Length: 138
Image (cartoon, rainbow, N blue to C red; front, side):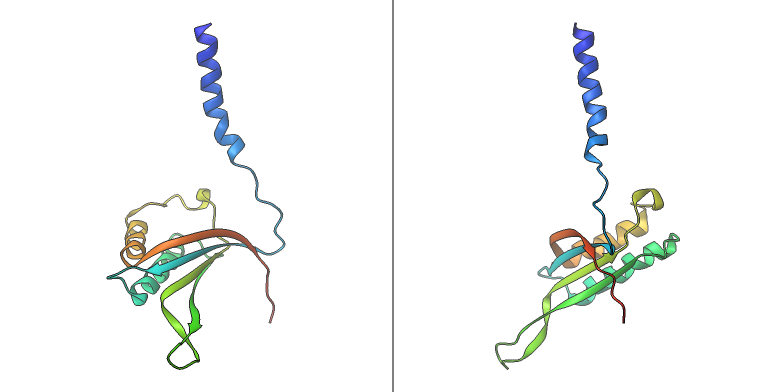
């Protein structure tokens, strides 16, 4: 009886990840990971933008060329002028067509850790969303 209970427990632990890995819903555009960052005290927008560039460069260095990472500064109202200005503290990033882990075996190597440190030294990630972004034509 103890063996049967142990076997059931073991099977449930090994089966759980398979159920958790469901396929993504149908997307007629591009999968995009949208992250919302806020500059930390002691961090800078230039430092955060450098992290985004290093992040994209890491993928190119590892042969991934069909994704794109873009940074988008938030436009906010300028109370002093009544106009608008670029935020000095808020940034969104869009990682369009992110590769799956099977295509990125070097994930977590020292260059990866270096750009991750750039992100964490400069900003706090406030939110992250996986989205279905429509394809735009111009």
